[in-house]
Image (tube, rainbow, N blue to C red; front, side, top):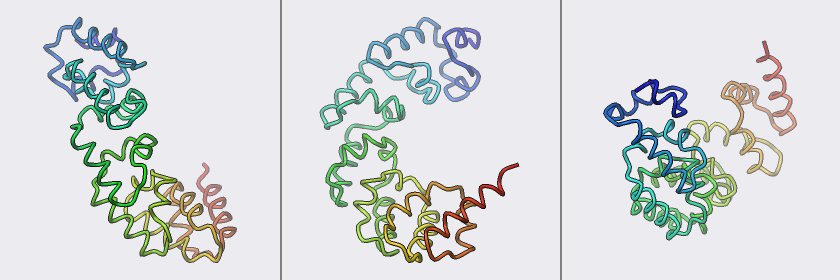
Length: 220
């Protein structure tokens, strides 16, 4: 079976089997057929999808086709691209996705479908967690957290501690344009963020100097 999976294009068959032991009784032609079916549905690299989410092999092709149709009905223009980005979407019930869209709209986001399209991982975030992050950002002093997250949905994926630390740093600066600075700071490594927090800079120029120095020191 390991040799068969390797021949089908799986780079690490052992890992695939470990994640989905039920694959062992499957005949190689069944797996080959599932790969062909996924290609027919528009997925360019089914092997990569299955490697990231082996449970896809357990889904009937009609179920996957139905999920694509459901996503289109919910307003998503390119469900295949979404599922390719986050194969785990196939695990989500359509009602849960619909509920997530409604929940985001109730939190003030005018176009949840567009947000989810840009970052499908949002479907895995709890509404309560998103609500808490909005509250944290408001408490830090950001005027429009909904607008911030709409512009940079990835904010929702960062840990609360990181958001609070970066927010405190930015809100202590004398410069305007805190939203953009906050987004840039979030992308830095934790070591760089800690160095900035310890230095207690007052301007964004000082922050940039600290970032440059920290990166130089980090080089071998």
